[in-house]
Amino acid sequence: MFFENYVFGPLKYGLSDLSKLLKGGVYYGVSIFLLILGIFLALYPYASMNLHIFGTATNSLVFAVVALFASLLGLGLLIVLNGYILKMIKLSLEKSLELPEWDNYWDLLKNGVVFTLGIAVIAVFGTILQNIITYFGNDSIALIVLSMIIQLIISLYIPLSVVNFAHEDNFGAFFDIPKIFKMMSFEYLGMFIVVSIISILLMIIPMILVIFPLLGFFGMNMYTGPKMLFIASPLLLVVALFALIVLSIVAVYVSFYSYRAYTNYFVSKNLEKIEEFNHEL
Image (cartoon, rainbow, N blue to C red; front, side, top):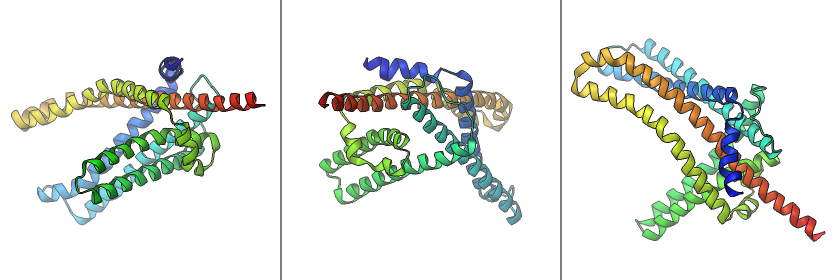
């Protein structure tokens, strides 16, 4: 039952409609590309000025505007994807067996903003708490361990808080600490570890595919010089684009898989409460 609920079932669910998975992978890949492009365009004018290649105030402003537009568009696509994941969780709570449709993008964007904001608030709070402990810790082993425990608790807390928000459809559900802590158990810890290991294993090959062209780029630049780099650049670009596509699809699949598993756990705990209530009656 454990592996069916948290491994095999969620893995099959993520592949229930390949067209929807591929569409999510495309959105994710484009968003990452736009964010990287935005960072590159924002930094390029300053680097080019130092190299005396490029750089008037007007051109720098153009680069800044384009960088801002690319970054906002990339961030918007990521938020839409978060809205889709939230929609997927809501349907999973109803035990739907297929991925939801990609439609109502305005609703996906609005819900994605709340989804992203909720996770961000929790993550920032955890980071601040860890920094406070580190600041006053004076390298104390006990406080370092405490900081690690807090990081683990935050990592365990976030998935359940997201599913609880999808269930309650109320922003405050992110911070229903007593309810969420009560749902944590050794079963949940075991499921969290298994899901994390499977997610890492799924991401290893795509990550290697991304690292390979980068190592090739820097290696050629260091040992063979700009001429060989110029000749090999088209091939490296093709490999890099292929790697980005594969990485994007797998990353989205891992998100579908993991949140389906967390939702299955959430549903099982609520069913237990219903059964206990009926038994008491």
